[in-house]
Structures are given as structure tokens and as C-alpha cells.
Length: 258
Image (cartoon, rainbow, N blue to C red; front, side, top):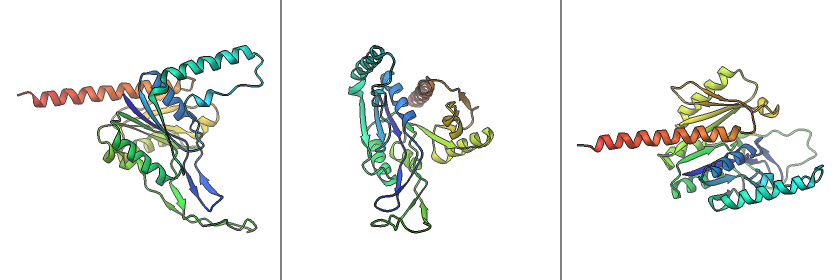
């Protein structure tokens, strides 16, 4: 199975040295890619310049560890795991990290590769200013930024790759659960997505990351917090994607039978 995962937060330049940035480390996206690789998938991981990367995010020696031997053993296991999947992981870095950069790379990837599933978890800027050449005066008492809405990249994905299983992400903050689920279902319909992963920024920051899987016409499924959250999400999505493909294959066979 061929999978695309996007991660990190895009930026919107204000001038040559400043930019607006979305709050996203890319950690959950990296975990999704790791889970897909462990399940035998080939993964194209499209990421912003500052995003955490699959496996690399864990490859740091804890200098304060009370048990150096255990830490060395952990890194050795990580290295072994990495070597077993490295041939199936393709990193696709954004050079500028802007929405335009993201759209161009994602379109190219989806048109060139037979992708089965796409997890579009990148935090994409909804607004961006028209960048000013040079540097704005840092001595000014205030700064007013006029920003324009950016194109919704996910809404073009069906045109680039009609048959893939499309997973969008909806992140809100401090909203009641019914509102979060309603927003996710609306996003599903607007984006022509098969599923939208809904989550609230506050649960993430509190270390209680909870996600809700929203599909139009189905009851929302809740995945509770835990270290295996990304793996449970991947298992459910891959299962739904395979089920849809089998249903479509059966429908095609029945249609072609005289």
C-alpha cells in the first residue's frame, strides 16, 4: 500500500525576517508514518522545514539518563527498526514551507504516484500577508498586518488523485464536542474526504490527546489518549480503505458480469 502523510505547520512570510506560523511540531504526523511503515506500507512523508521526522525524532541521546546502557540499547533497537523500513520511506521536504510550496509538492506527488491513502495532517495557514521586501521597522509602536485567505489545498486532492482514501484533520480549540464533530463532518463534505480526524488543541497540550474519527452518515468513533494512538488511528484507516476498495472491486465485477 502506498501512503502519503503530511506534517508540520506552514509559514506565511511578513517580511524577509518575520513570518506567521501555524502551531504544529509534526510529531503526530511522524508517528503516523512510523505506524504505516511498521504495517508494510511505502510512505511519502511531506513535511515543513522544522517538522519532526519519522524515527529521527527519537534518535537523540538522553544525556541525563540514569541508565546509559539502557539508553544505548534503545538507540540500537531504533537503528535496527529504521534499517528494516528505510527503503520504504521517502522524505519530501518543503523548501519554503509556504502554502504555495505545499500545494505544488502535494499535487506533483499525487499525480506521479499511485497513492492509496493520504493522511493530510499538516497545519496549513488559512491566511497569509503579502510579504514586504526587506525588514519592517522594529522601532514602530505597532504593526498592522493585512492578510488574505489562502486556497484550501485539500479541496483539490480529489482532482489530483480521485481514487485515494482521503483523511483530513480538523483542529479546533476550546469548543464543545458536538461543535467539533459538526465542524469535522462539514469539512468532510466540503473537502470530499472519506474521513476527518477531529481533535481539540487543549487536550493535546494537556497530554491527553484524543481524536474523533468522523465520516458522514456514520457515528463518530473516539480514540482515547495513549502511546498507541497513532497506531490505532492507522489501523482503523487502513481497514476502512481496504473495505472500500473491496466493495468497489465487487461492484465493478458485478457490473461487468453479463
